Length: 325
Image (cartoon, rainbow, N blue to C red; front, side, top):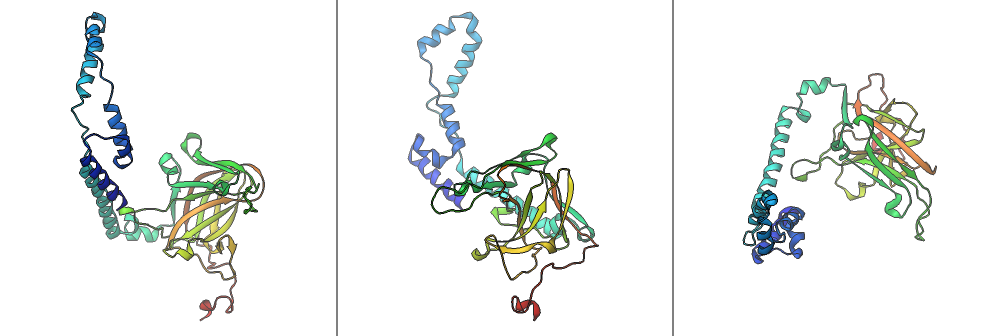
């Protein structure tokens, strides 16, 4: 709706003014501004053009300039159709919606049901190009005035992603913050047609499967639940991952993830809801200043038949009465 409102406002200003100005560029869009500026080129004077035509060696250049002058006539107006832009955007989202409906009838995520039931492992994220990096975002304590830096790029031969930077535990000089020093990499929330929030369903798996290597630092793996309640936006399930020098496999059972809120481990613990996974992230905050790196090949889930533990943490009727009804 915000996109439609923006385009309609641009249409109103385009009809009100016969010639677009710089004040209208925020409404008409960057592409239109670049296109309009490219059309408004200075027209050569007739005397200069006639003198150039007299030179036989510049006949070809003069011909190209005459063609350019015909294109950049002041009487012509750029052909910009906002109705077409709105129609193309609607067609794109309806096409996505159609694909989602077809995949839903075919089976989970477009696969037949019998294949999904027999599936033992699945790669959720892998890094083979820039489009894979666009599914992630990086952040650090710079958002609160810190000095840590973090970057994400493709590794050698486009076979992995490299998360690197510098960690600094120096607190911001703002008179309020007393602690600092963290860097994180977080997956973007998947979106469906018309920008609807989607989620991952890992209920048939019991283990998180990663192929990573780092410099020996401990990282915290965070998984967030898909929720529409504002009170739960800071809740997550976490577990520590200790990296080693080689490309080792990391297997973390979902039963090991503990529940936390605003970075504090809660007394009342409960299992990770695997049918509503919103995002996953990696956080470094070990208070060791200096450079770091983490190389990631892929992130997936699988079913380990040898792992039968449902939940690794104790509860009591006093802490969580719902579990003992």
